[in-house]
Length: 502
Ligand SMILES: CCCCCCCCCCCCCCCCCCCCCCCC(=O)SCCNC(=O)CCNC(=O)[C@H](O)C(C)(C)COP(=O)(O)OP(=O)(O)OC[C@H]1O[C@@H](n2cnc3c(N)ncnc32)[C@H](O)[C@@H]1OP(=O)(O)O
Ligand SMILES: NC(=O)C1=CN([C@@H]2O[C@H](COP(=O)(O)OP(=O)(O)OC[C@H]3O[C@@H](n4cnc5c(N)ncnc54)[C@H](OP(=O)(O)O)[C@@H]3O)[C@@H](O)[C@H]2O)C=CC1
Image (tube, helix red, strand yellow):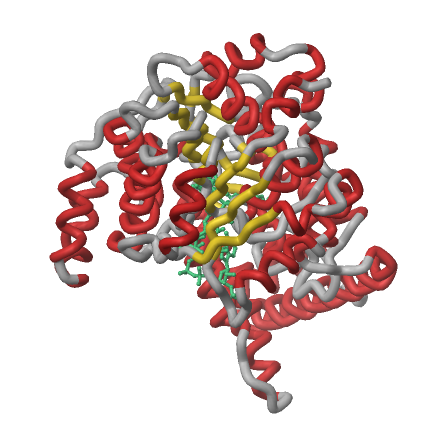
């Protein structure tokens, strides 16, 4: 029997961000490996017209939970959705719920965050810093609390090149930032944001760094640990390969490439693509929860959950494998044939943007107008290129993360725990993983049927023929113009192909 799985048996666990990508996989694994856990409290807000209960039912009815429900048939009874909004001052938790959470919780996994790079600083601080502070305050009033695990990001100090498993101080104290956000108006916040974030690329990484400082300063007497994953990708093995349900990280750009919209990317092919499968992050997080509760380390330990230093993959290799997979498993109704280049040269990127992104979009919109339809491609391209520009920072640099604590933890696990809670990224085969990732995007994100693959391949063949026809026509027009206007071109042409009667 796994020691870690047994540890979670009978426990009351509180998860924030359980409706998010990581949170769902965390819940699934807990139910599958520790079906005898007492209860999982999840802090949820109503969203998109759905009540809390509807959201929970939708999650539990998804394919992700099929295996977990076989092992733990009464999973519905073991989830307790608690109304909460982490943006509100009191987290909007009712008195009754708060009482129950405070008196029963044994372990807290704090996953909730805004992961948007371009979020307004006020909102990012509210969620990634202030809410963390409030949860720590709550945790300090939980008599049965054994561990508080905070999920941060490996990029919280991405202004550094080498990052150790320590908390680096931010120039301005988090408390001062929290206070100022309460009285400064939006215009002033907009003005000071670049100065505050300094050499951080966006408000997300900046506020995640502040969040870590808050954990260090206010988690004083608690048993706290921080997990820092890098770019979280689809599942590697568990509960099945390739599961993913949002556009974050590489997923959105893989779709844009597969659908033929994205044809060039300013990326450094030899920069490390520090992607980490979500099931590895979850396995490490659960192992950290166990170790923190049982061993009670004297200081707050930080665990890097990264792939680069143990089993590196590079953006060039990843891009190549993504394209190779589209040959076998194409996406349906592509705009153009998937074919993209990675280039680290800004001038080349601008050239490809004009030729491969804007020109086809403008031509297609012209065609839509001609056929009486509403143009939409230039708008879509605009949005896509804006998104790409936000991600460029992360695909043109490499970082070195030390993983001493993570490796130490692995050495403390029994062979059975190393198998059940495997977070050894050295065992990951990238080519296989990327292929499953693309397949997972097709099945679970785009919800495309595998039976449609022959038709998708036919469609790509048609696009290839259109492409050849278009290029031939373009060449003939250019040739005709040149022959009509340039004596030198005519001389060269007649030299190569002399007329018959000579
Ligand atoms: C040699 C051969 C080479 C061949 C090349 C082939 C290329 C193959 C592809 C290779 C993949 C390379 C991908 C690299 C990606 C690297 C990502 C790096 C991420 C670093 C992570 C840091 C670690 C973290 O902790 S972050 C957590 C994850 N966060 C994110 O990923 C970002 C989240 N999203 C945002 O910040 C914003 O949504 C943003 C900035 C992307 C866009 O914001 P904006 O306000 O402009 O619009 P939105 O309203 O948010 O969305 C507009 C529109 O875009 C869709 N969308 C959202 N996110 C993404 C996305 N990540 N990619 C693509 N599209 C996205 C969104 O759904 C909206 O669409 P609608 O149709 O309007 O709904
Ligand atoms: N994805 C990645 O590549 C990486 C993620 N991380 C970290 O992992 C953690 C989880 O990220 P991930 O699962 O990808 O993110 P998601 O965006 O998928 O999930 C975010 C979660 O936070 C919840 N949340 C957001 N705002 C509120 C609010 N006001 N009140 C209550 N809940 C709220 C969301 O709820 P709702 O469903 O209602 O919106 C959702 O459950 C984060 O801490 C992130 O920083 C770290 C490195 C990389």
